[in-house]
Image 1 (spheres, rainbow, N blue to C red):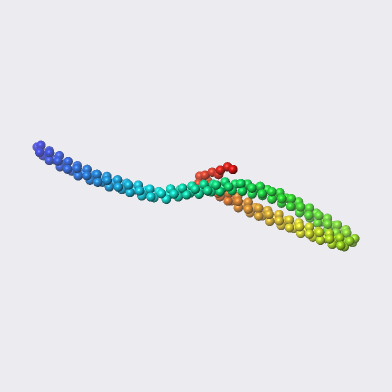
Image 2: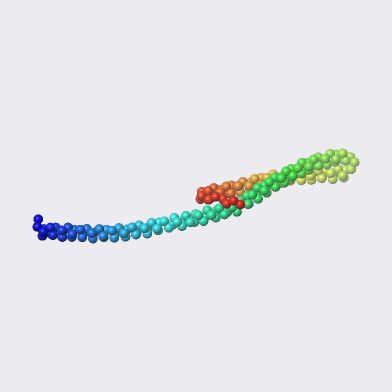
Length: 176
């Protein structure tokens, strides 16, 4: 093979390599453009998720704050329930006392029936009033216990649900 043939062959190979280099450069340039488009699309797709995550975090913090604020209310409600329970016991004692007094007045009215009809009528009216008083105390105690139980149930459920929501967001309640 002559030097001219080698030179022609190298020139041809050089031209082919040059064309392939240009083609490769164009492909790399197009690829860079596609990567930029992909990056821009990824950023656009992620933006709403990031905003949503931020909103969820703020919601969780607000729920945590609400739970923290409800804890003293729940504690006070528990204390109020205890006080109402003690008051109910006192009302029940008053009811028993009123019943005893009513019976005593009735017995006294029977003893004095023949002596003084007017006094007997007064004592009978007093006995009836005491019976009515006892009945109203019973109603009040029953209604109070029922209302308190309902209120305690709702507050307890609400605090429990808020606690579970905080746990779902990976947050813990702050101590009082």
